[in-house]
Image (cartoon, rainbow, N blue to C red; front, side, top):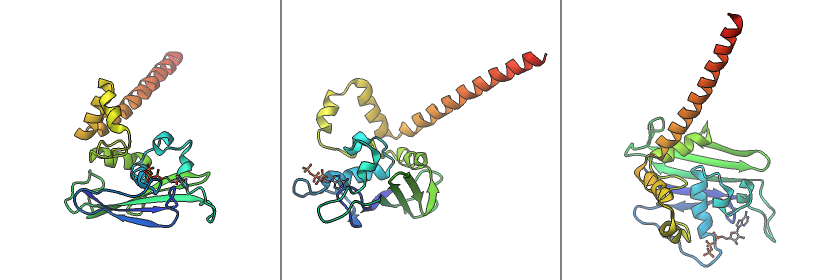
Length: 202
Ligand code: ATP
C-alpha cells in the first residue's frame, strides 16, 4: 500500500485543483516561507480523518476551506483526495478488493465532512480505521511537523508509548476495544432495565 497522488481543491491556500504526485522513495517539499508546505502535510492528515481543528492550525474545522484573497472570493467547500496504490494487496480487509484506492474527504460550509472510498460513501471511522490498521494515519509518526521532535523528546512516557503503538499498527485495536467496551456498558444497562421490568411484572 503506497500513496501515489494527493489532490487538493479549495483546501487552505490551494484554491485551484492541485495534484502532488508522490513518487517512490523519500519525498521532500521545499519552498519559500508561507508557500503552503505545512498546508500539504495538513491535507494529508485531514483526508486520513484528522478531526482536531488545533492539528489543522485553525479554530474550527471549516477553517480549512479557502478563506478568500484580495483577488479571489472564498470557496464554499474544500476537498482532498488521496490515491493509494494497493497492487501489493496490503490494504486492510474490507478495502482490499482493488488495485487502487481513492479516498476523498470533502467539507462544505454549514454541512460538515463527507468521505468516499472508490466512489462509495463511508463513515469517518471507516477511513480512520483503514489508516490505523495500515499503521499510518492522521497521527502517524511518519508525518513529522515543525516542533514535533522536541515535543517527542520532552513527552511523558505514556504519550511516547502511544507513538510507538501507532508505529506498530495496533492503535486500530485500541479503538475497537474502546467501542466494544461502550457496547458492553450499554448492554449491561439494558439488562438491568430488563431485570427491573421483570421484577415489576412478577
Ligand atoms: P513556513 O515555511 O513559514 O512554515 P509554509 O510553506 O509551511 O510556511 P503554510 O503554513 O503551509 O506555509 O501556508 C501558509 C499560507 O496558507 C499563508 O499564506 C496563509 O494565509 C494560507 N492559508 C492558510 N489557511 C488558509 C485558508 N483557509 N484560506 C486561504 N489561505 C490560507
